[in-house]
Length: 121
Image 1 (cartoon, rainbow, N blue to C red):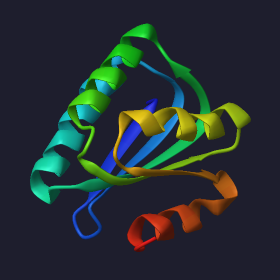
Image 2 (image 1 turned 135 degrees about the horizontal axis):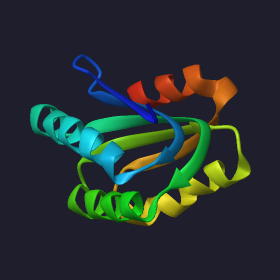
Image 3 (image 1 turned 90 degrees about the vertical axis):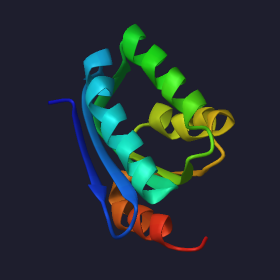
């Protein structure tokens, strides 16, 4: 399964672990979970960790853009965790599509990423 999604009721964090290539079907799984979390929490944060991530299909890119526009102001922080230079660049590319604070962490810094999501920084 390319995507695992879990929400944490206490921290208001949506955990996403991504492997391989995201498809439109993956968004069909993710979007309802994320929208329910937004409905319950008001604002949420996202922990987005990539393992052997190869990108998005065209259909998934379209779903991602629609989601980002619809939820422009619904996230407080987004921690992007990976181990490739282009994944690091995703943090910069995402910023115009959200009001959330966005920060990249190397996979070895996953604990710091989670701490950052929960802190007041």
